[in-house]
Length: 356
Image (spheres, rainbow, N blue to C red):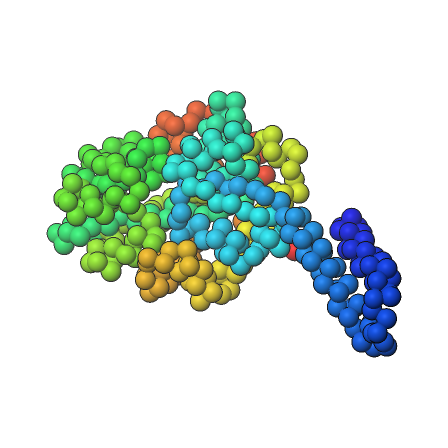
């Protein structure tokens, strides 16, 4: 900070010196007019120099995200409302196309932060590449199971899926893990088929009669409802409060970049508060991020996400929510370690952010 101001004063001194050296050439200027001209000249140089210094103080960081999803709205609000910059960060968001790819970007140093399924931090730790979850981004499992078929009744229990084909995002996604857990039915497997498809392809799979129902999240749920689909089942009630998406860093980055981590979590906390308090403003940000989606659908999607608690009010991630997510991975065989909360989650930064 002192260096920046020193630079400003150095610039001002140079202008004053120039004025002195050219005194003979501006001798026709007198009184207030002379002072006014010099004041404007000095002010322009000082402002330019100080503004340039302020811009260079922003820390460049990259956040790797699974994809560009409405449920990641806290990230977009933090960027578009200037909260990251308020905290001294210039953020670049990149999409990886997968949970595993996201944490790989973090561990290789291609990104400083990752946003995806938080359990991949624990899974990677088994392979010698650990990290920390420093904030929760999405809480609960936000999936709705939907159909266009009028002859399929509402699903009330896992056994009701018997005989049906369910379109899901591919393994090892959280979507696939969740439907696998549901169909395991606590040791009484349900005879249903999971049809795997890439993100964005599930509605087409359903409409082509390659599946009887699909498992998707907002804003696709609201889009499909507008097209005539019905919600048969919601995973939020089945799983309860569970970790779904987290802001993660590698162990090595966490050791030497506490200031930047705190700044990022502060910005996310501000964004979450904004989303809870300003629905029209949040929809406006969503509209800017997803201009291809009608505002009415974005409004419905955000309302549903907030009411179900999938867009959280704070970046805190509880031990119970973490343990449920880890238990799911263990049950379907993706994870065999301890997956302890203490080893993989650090809520110090989230707690500090909430005190501000």
